[in-house]
Image (tube, rainbow, N blue to C red; front, side, top):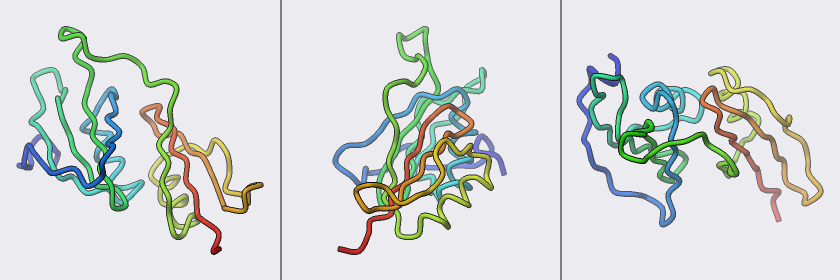
Length: 139
């Protein structure tokens, strides 16, 4: 069933204190991509309007909240993403990275051991958002 045909709650409690809020073109499609790529759970989803946009989606990803919506320029909201990425701290970076690339994310920087000792990689999702992944070295 598509997100527009599925009934979801329109509010969910944030898991984390600071919550990234993404504006992407095609927020409903992005939410379903994040389900496949990052194991996201859709916690809340406002209905899609007649232009195919949604004003709010709340996801749970790896124990934290991420929110997103489409742009609404007629209300002064929107613009291209710039100047940030989202970092996922994971316990098995190879599994997480493979799932994301299998879902359609593009590798920007392959997973490798970094100078700080952790394993790190960087992906770009089909909506232009950069996702870094970091697997902490046991200390």
